Image 1 (tube, rainbow, N blue to C red):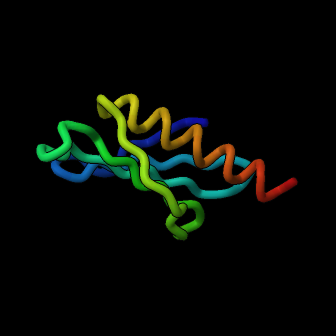
Image 2 (cartoon, helix red, strand yellow):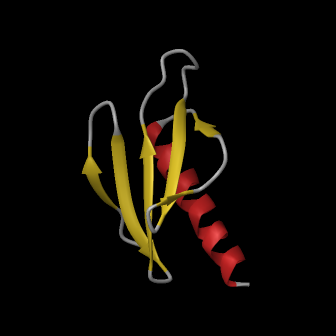
Length: 76
């Protein structure tokens, strides 16, 4: 995987591909929870779930890990 960050600021977006599927992970700091919510899209479709991380880098790492697991599971 070779992640590319395409948006920065209040909304941070990184993209990558895994097994020919496009993954997008979006995060940004949420002051109310003091966390970084994680939103995951595979081929433009939102992955259902609710995840939060303590840092932006952790949010991206976790988001791509979850997306990879979802793709692996759907291929099985």
